[in-house]
Image (cartoon, rainbow, N blue to C red):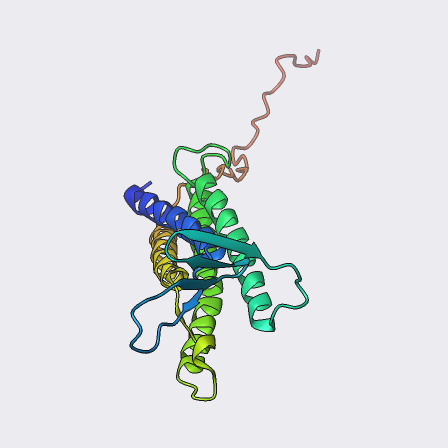
Length: 224
């Protein structure tokens, strides 16, 4: 297979994208407390994530609590949860398919065409994973920025962009690059002349143009 380093780079980036997707989903720093004003003494920090919220008091103790009720969550949070769970599943499936399409993996046989299509499918799934991560991350960031500049919202309820959102954007970039490399590998091998099995030659039966020569019989009748 040509372009072997291309598929290695694509799968490595896809693996890091999967790890970043899991980290973005689990980290509670989606929304962090905003410090507005001239008071430099901060006694507590508030972190809000998809699964829990945490309070850090005096930079010493950290208390986290999972959300007890699913139905009481806002629709935005429920949608973000669902999209991120789908993204994790897609990234895992994409990684498995990509590994099956590697050069030295014989679980799918030795056909180079099949392996190229598997890697292309893995690249498409990685790109879809990036889209599923980008939607909730950008949606949450838009809500945070909108509420921050809304004068009708109390200062204590305003939040800022957390570290998990920046990790999500970086993960999206890695997934897009890795998926693009795998799709490019598949496209580069599409125009390749794949070896085919030789077609058995069909021989047309030829007519025997040679006329049959009748040999006269040696026995002859004698007349007396």
